[in-house]
Length: 147
Image 1 (cartoon, rainbow, N blue to C red):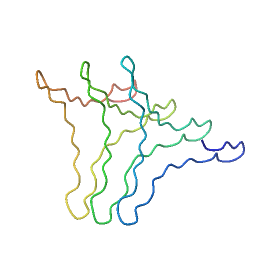
Image 2 (cartoon, rainbow, N blue to C red):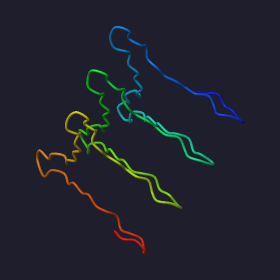
Image 3 (cartoon, one colour):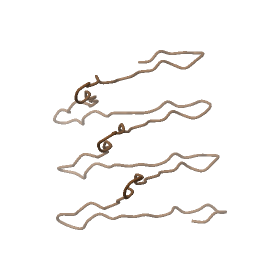
Image 4 (tube, rainbow, N blue to C red):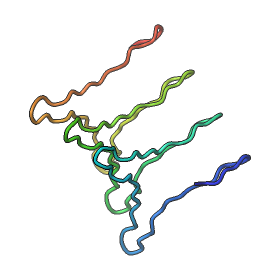
């Protein structure tokens, strides 16, 4: 844990692998252990603290740039369910009581010497029945706005 400060910024915590001077750098693995027969595996929580005045912190997940190869991959996935439904991946922006709500933005990458990256939204395949539904909609507006 980082140190506590009553007058300035609190302490920092850094988890970092070793550098590979000739080949790859190391791997950081953060995971909960498997559960017993009648339990659930543990939960991982990544959260920034609450701000009393000012903005709350950010959570940044990304890969490093590649000077001669491809950029890295960021993948977020939910687990499969063998006797129930598959896991859920959900993204939403924050609520504001005084200004506009937050923004969820998904965009393809810029291609400076070639085609720009695409954006793909697809439903899941139903191998025994129907495939999933893709719904894109605007929410209802307030009394003085438009939907």
